[in-house]
Length: 233
Image (cartoon, rainbow, N blue to C red; front, top):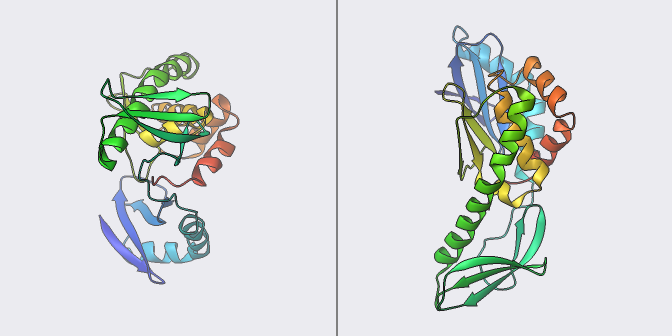
């Protein structure tokens, strides 16, 4: 992987066995990546990026001016999200089993040992998010396997800084960002569909977009919704 600079913007330069040029600006910090055919030299790549400078600047501004979530301390009274809904966190000391409960459609209750640290409270909540995603995702996979006509051999959940999801086409494996536990169910379903459609088409080209429009007509609006959300905690 190389790097070029255009108007003081550093751009990751990747040469791949592709025919078309792919320019991407990633949330949350506006990182820019340019994938070009293997035969294209740095000067040609720089000229292409320069021709797209207005678009690059606009996208970077959109991400860098997004409101960032405040640093979490995982204490009583903080606002936390689950499945697209805001809840109030309550930390409850217990000598019993440490666990998480939703209460009165308003609270997320963390039951922990007395004197718990921020790290332990965060870990308990993250594990709860992960378990819930792992319970929900299989139903989406089963539903969309029948519609799309592909099979998912394995799925996983992990924290990712720049992607909502990713996949391994050869192994038929998909990975879902843990942060999606906090988002509306339509966002989670969209990412599952997005990664599964990659089993039919690797690139984000017209073929891929046509598949998405066929299977999930509202995908563009959901994509825009996610693009306006920071991946940072």
